[in-house]
Image 1 (cartoon, rainbow, N blue to C red):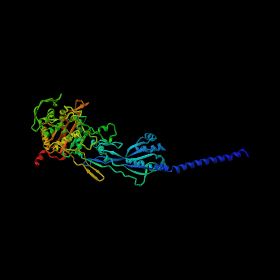
Image 2: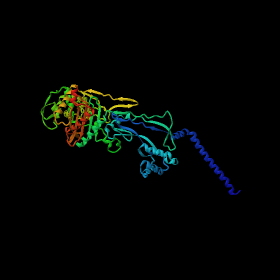
Image 3: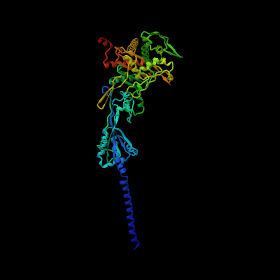
Image 4: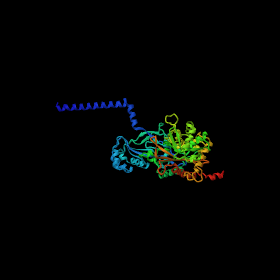
Length: 580
């Protein structure tokens, strides 16, 4: 037998042996996965093919009382590349770039950097999404080219009227988290509950073929929130506030309009403002903070209304009380002066309010004593949240005897609105209590909530009787007479008696000193004085044309009030008297 003949059977036997060994190895692997680890492998395959997909709930609308839409959800699409890998990025870029309206090279760069998942486009309209999906469905010959591309519809919060009522509504950011206003306060009701659908993925691992299983959960849309805001009234205050801030060259400002009998807020504006649709842009978020509830301030002389009402109600003064005004009064080691450094001699209560005399306000608080004075202050709602339905409300700061902050001089300075912090909503609610025969009402801005076919209406909530009705009427008379005593008073509204008070408050710097030039100018009032239907607060921060509330805030009150009484159809005083 030749050597060649001997080698051929040996090679055959070796090849057969190797095939046999490899077969045994494969059989062992199959046994391992098919028998020993069958459950685990089966579950992995199922997880690869089957998955859950969220069904997004629609966030509830926010509307004015007349149905003007302020916030709603629309569906927009997100186009992204999943980390499963693309076969032909160049071909996909060629097809997608003209549809998405982006440069082909920029899109190709995104497609090639998709290792962790890359979002190609956000907020894509339904029409564009439909074009992409239609092209993918038609492109059967290049099926693999579309592997890894996903088009998913998601709700996007939009604000159809832009800046209108922006500080009331607040906004929802790109992560669907609410900030400020109604959006944040009522988030639990507005957001609804997302659902879930289970199914198998298609060949591209992009679309879901749903199973009709009991485990599928439908989405529950959020509640609809209807505000107390009157749209036309809101437009009036926004226009007048912007004009006032610009003309007086103020840093910012706010106007609130309230029904004193119920506490319903009819309009609320802050300026500068911003478009909540652009909340993702740098600097916009800060401009949407609602200073009427979130930024306390020292109110200045408008607070003298509270001091006057408290002293009259406690009986430490009467409507006939007169004072000898020396222009200065000492408390402890501190001298407190009238704002104009003048002494007015013998004055009654109308003159005290007309000239806004600090010294006489201090005398009233001293006559009350710290215990009674701060009890009235807190009864009027200061130092506690009003519980209005706006997120971010702060309590302000009312010092108390023995709290480590209070000093003897505070009893004097607090009487004319310095050294005490309040919010504009607190201030207006307190003045509205005087207009409402001494009844403090909880301010509210939501008229009703509609959810699941049910309507939950907000009922006006009486908080407490702060002062006696006769005291409230006396204060109204004094405030009205003090305005009539000034023939040139800029707050006057022709045909209507108004009751109100100006405020010019210095702005503290560093918590110790007051800025020599900056002030907060304000006017708070209500009308008609004999039957108050509307209460208005005007506040301007750091006005440059004049520091005085009587010069810059009073005219704004008059402009707003004139338009509101016409809008509400409130007849002039002469007509009301003739009809009685």
